[in-house]
Image 1 (cartoon, rainbow, N blue to C red):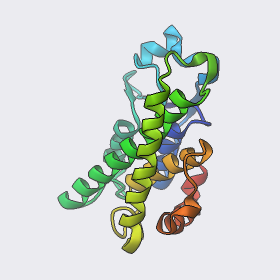
Image 2 (image 1 turned 90 degrees about the vertical axis):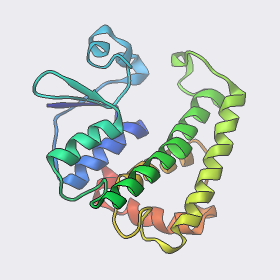
Image 3 (image 1 turned 90 degrees about the horizontal axis):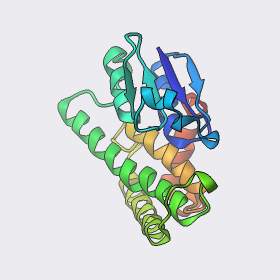
Length: 203
């Protein structure tokens, strides 16, 4: 088994955090996206989408995408449950994970790639108007999250979940991209301080 990673990027960090919370260690190989290693024929044979992260299993099959990889480890290492326990919990975790993935992670990354120099020559296409729309969406989602966290320890109640992992990695990237400051959102700031103090946040 091997995890194909690129440490500086926010999406691979999501999987590393998930594994750290599970206490699971997997050999890691770095795929340097800045050098275009994700677009080589060798890597695309593993993951035709040419993205990181990607998990290589012992049977020579591959799983790409943060949630898909996380779901594999949730099934093989069920404790602690990071994707909900009861059917209602699982549904709520899935709902919020998707909300923060689309509204924070995808939106902030789209802003970075389209409305800033992004990755320079590696950028295949840029649309500044689309980037700025996603800038607005990121801010709107942070406001929604701030309201949701007014009376909650974590995004889905009292239990830390994959939704918190996705949101932390996304917000840290949004701060890096100078879209938001957590200091402007008191409930997000309190939550951010708490989850950033977890050992897994350093993964």
